[in-house]
Length: 211
Ligand code: SAH
Ligand code: DHB
Ligand code: MG
Image (cartoon, rainbow, N blue to C red; front, side, top):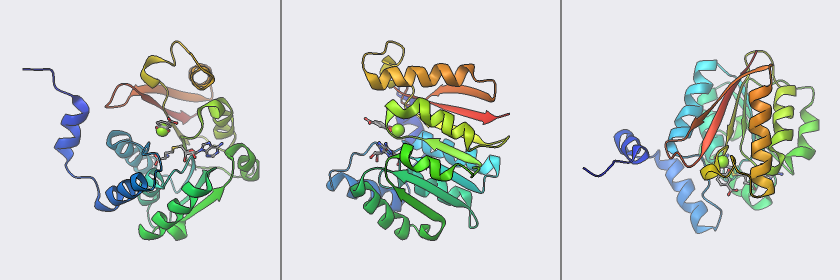
């Protein structure tokens, strides 16, 4: 037999994408918004981590059209709250519509602007769960902010830490920053961290828990 593809196998096994998430994705595509939302395996991992940690509030850096934000808001539950940061006005507008459609708008606060400008406004807050998924050059700064906005037990997840291997041999400022992020993550004694392949192993994500 030809070698099988794990991502395809698992996605087929688990069946159809949630109909609303699918609509969001298809509409984003037709509006020329990049469909770089979390794939199924990472989406499900985020949901499990939010549930298992009992998180009640979360911070997301990089909203896009609200795909992972909807998943996070749902997983946080009826009394959960999500703050999500997005630099693109176009993405923010579509995301707001999507949060309303998903029935989570009253529990999601979308702040529009560049995350490094918005994060200082949150300096006195602590989040139970933090998802880093915006511009890659700022990842080292996002990690320091995530730690600052954490408490013992906070779970921090970051996407796009491998980029088909380019992070191991950085060839541009994005990949150089991701390599720095990975070094910082691995060396930080305040965290217990791991980097894991996505089901599509051309990319990877980290999971950390704050000691
Ligand atoms: N988490 C989303 C995907 C995010 S894609 C999901 O899985 O559904 C990355 C997003 O980060 C894009 O929407 C991009 O506009 C946004 N972004 C890029 N630079 C940013 C910045 N400096 N501050 C905040 N958001 C930024
Ligand atoms: C890109 C960004 C992402 O967050 C992602 O998951 C995939 C691609 C990008 O900027 O190309
Ligand atoms: Mg990503």
